[in-house]
Length: 266
Image (cartoon, rainbow, N blue to C red; front, top):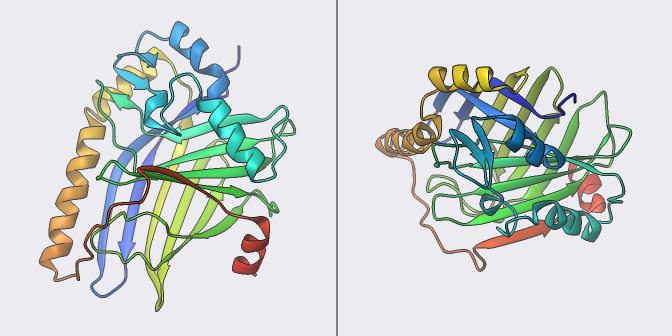
């Protein structure tokens, strides 16, 4: 069986432009997991587990509404509400895996692809350090040379140094030999910051997972550590602080219409 799942090793970079410039760059990796292959990967690989402990694992409870065994059906419900045909839909998830049981995913991307391979919708699942999760469900209105450009209003508090009154602009290239996820966050004065993940594809195997672990030991713990370390550096630069106001719902979803996309990106 030729796997549609893969491993992407690369780099995440953030640049903040105002009121003080701040840049960070870290070597990371992500897994791209086809939801229909999870059971097969769980049985084939010794170092990967689905809904169980392993060196690397993926748990349904970390995503969607948290219901174990129902992640695909949850995604399909969101797509149906957004007016997207879910027949023969392939759903692939780009995220950090749990490593020895621990993970924090600031952003998980769900690529929802029709049988012809074209991405028909993207789900952007954003998590913050207050254990709140918000998913933006955005149909793909066009495909210009494989690039996907989308936008939505920010609905979830993420950083104490970024106001809530912002918009996200997403710039994606669907996973192939490489993957690219770019996000620009704009406030009322224009571009505030950009964040980019780019990586190169590798096949998932026990050997590759073991070598990746040696190269990135406890990467998910380091992700959380880096968030707080960079926050300290930003605070020391005198950035204004925006206090957290708890979300109305700990887990929420926003359906972004095609009309709003056309109006926003025109």
